[in-house]
Image (cartoon, rainbow, N blue to C red):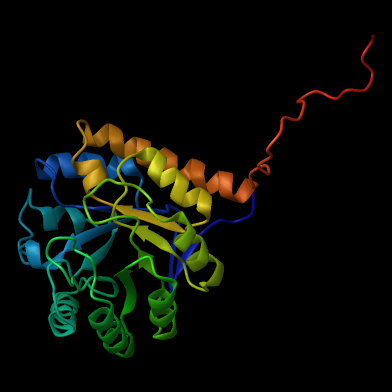
Length: 258
């Protein structure tokens, strides 16, 4: 098969699985799950960790080991201004170039605020950040974010941490049909089959945290997610057979002795 590198702006990756670093029982469990996932990109919620704590055994010491590309995110931000300030601070600390923009509009559903997300994206792109925005699975906002200069779009599959899987594959198909930048499903994945479906639809990647961290065996689930993303991508590239209403014989009908 030809080269299947994931290209996001100036960055290049072989793995299409993005994983988070929250909700694990310990830093050691986080480390084991990250390694098992095969991910090259890990997300860190800037407002929920001590960015200056690089002591041995800390989360920041783990993710700053240069084994992974850090994708700092603005989880917990509710305005464009808060998100922009948070990422500027991360840049000053040397950990923000490729960034996940997340501006929440509702505390219960954790749905993003489209207007604030778009406003922040325009500012960050102008300041030289490579922006990956978390957004609703809406083709219109995805187009506007792409037009604003975002290097990818990250529509949700379902509410953050819900584990409901892909609730609207048809919207995702429209987004995929129109987007000229990578489309990465973000939020709502619950198990390996959800990740495989996203990739079979043609998504360029999947980002998840709770689906792995909240599993009974996070490390084993990380392995399952790695395999599901890989299998789904291969199935998409191979091209599935057409669906038919009626049966067709698997064996040819010629040459049969009556």
